[in-house]
Image: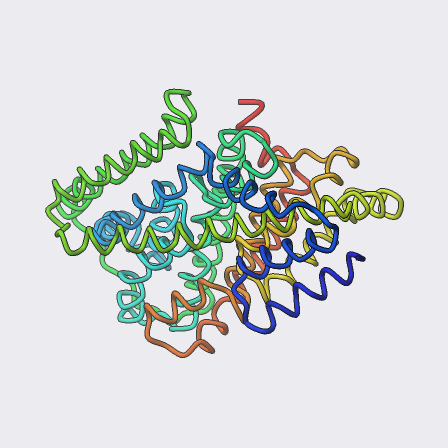
Amino acid sequence: MSAFAILAALLALLALGVPVAFALGGLGLILMWFADLSPVMVPQALYSTTDSFVLLSVPLFLLMSNVLLKGGVGRDLFAAVQSWVGHWPGGLAIATILSCGMFSAISGSSVATAATIGTVAIPEMINRGYHRPFVLGLLAAGGTLGILIPPSIPMIVYGVITEESIVDLFLAGVGPGLLLLGFFILLSFAYAKFGGGYTPVPRASWTERRRASIRALPTVLLAAVVIGGIYAGVFTPTESAGVGFAVSLVIVYVLRTMTWAKLKEAVTDAMHTTVTIFLIVAGAHIFGKAITLYRIPQDISMAIGNNIGEVGLFILIVCAVLLLMGCFLESMSMLLIMVPVLLPSLAAMGIDPIWFGVIFVIMIECALITPPVGLNLFVIQAVGHVPIEEVLRGVWPFILVLFITVVAVYFIPDIALFIPFKL
């Protein structure tokens, strides 16, 4: 069966509304049946997928981010950042982006980041005269920092697929994450200077700054523990997720912002997301094993090697394909479908898989804010109680900024590789 026929079958299943996990797993099972392969390979593939110490960090990071979300930690974090930069031109927008960056360093989730900061920032910014589409676009894009700045759940899954170091992937995301954060801040400043439409916020007093900073300090320390512990080699990413979850429980207990009902809701939400991710991973694993047996990744790799000699052209084609796929698939599905197919080509073309992983994740960020299935678009729509069209109008400048970041990482690889390999 040709690669085109398999791709057409997969797209047909997705168009019929079959859930991604079952479309991938079911098609993989059918391919194995056509090849007269033992069906015993399916349960073996399912078991080998979930029997992973590294993947154990996914539910733990999700638990941590959901506990912080239900515990109202985002409100304290936003208030602290706002007290320091809120009086700058576009200060509330800058405070929003900085808050997204800080919360990203403890959540690993784009959705949790967008929902947590958006709940607090959207009404505050709109009340201060910011144009609503800009506010919605800012929050949708700011939430994507959650999968680039470590800890990042897509990077964990990418590392499992490629068998690359999760620590190196996390550290490689720091530089591009800070660069993207800086670009978003510049865009916010330019909006305030030339776009107008906001009411300046008075400078906070030193007393207000001290009180807000003290209340947000535990959250900042949590980020330092999670990231610093990984970088210093004190614990693995999986162990850091467990430590982070335990510390997050302590934080919300000390702040007295968590109830049993909220904790139950946080655990249930984390469980639902974990099951969804693991089902997609398992389905993709079966599909990946099937297409490997049909030698499709090898054939694609050979075709690329024979027809594409330039790394730049290869990256350009990959980005174009991911941009197109992002209009129809959510981010985790893109990662699990594309990476096994492209992985052989990386070695053939001498492309660093860590560097490629960073570019891949930035393109996934684009998928999170591109219609019609960009998940962050719907999160911000739900949080802001607004039509989806308003979110779309505000998000396009931030998509352009993401493309600029990809170009910067391509031409200056050390943006991603300096911290893990040269620092």
